[in-house]
Length: 261
Image 1: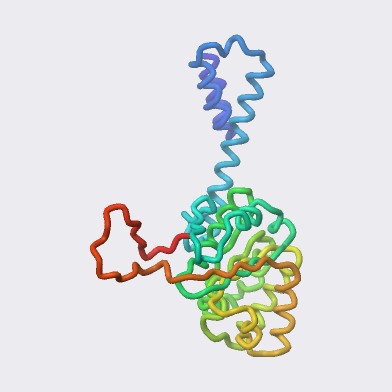
Image 2: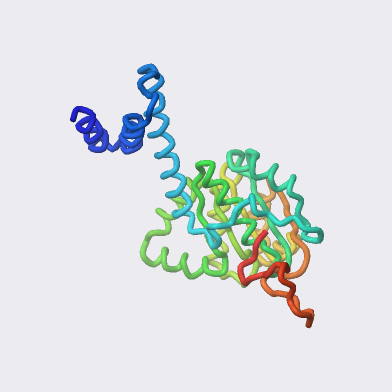
């Protein structure tokens, strides 16, 4: 009865991990042989791990990634893709987020740029970093709405606090004057302090022309290029299965509409 009361009190104190661990200790043989300090340590560890798991799940949900299931463990480094597993893992496990580096991913359509960006962002969430995903072609419309309802300033402050910003499909469509100016504000706020991932079909040397305004382009690219890692994907599109005219073999991998890395 006393232990039941204690577990209920732990739940009321919002310590479900400790309550669960205490229940496990009651039912597991041999726990009585452990010292008070050892059992207390196990209770606290359970609570810490539970809260950590919940925080990571919350960060991943808030990130709104296009491919939330993307994982660096699933990277496909087959020849011809322009990817080296050692380089990707070194980047993912490094301090690029803490150091506010940019990761610039370029390559043809269907090469898996968005998937790779999401895999890096997903791993950042797993390491406890906040992430926000945004497709650049839709940014203009969203920014107009935020300016219209006077939420742009608050949103900008939230972006400044976000550890990793993913700007997907950079340069896919033109941008207007207001979007160009807002994009510079976003990038300027993050320069050298917060990490940004950019994916684009356009080679980096064409980004200046895409921005359209030479002065803003100079300022924007100067900030992006301060500290950056460049990944150039190659090879055929992963979205379509090649038409060979031959009957598909039983063990032949099938490529779906969702690219993988």
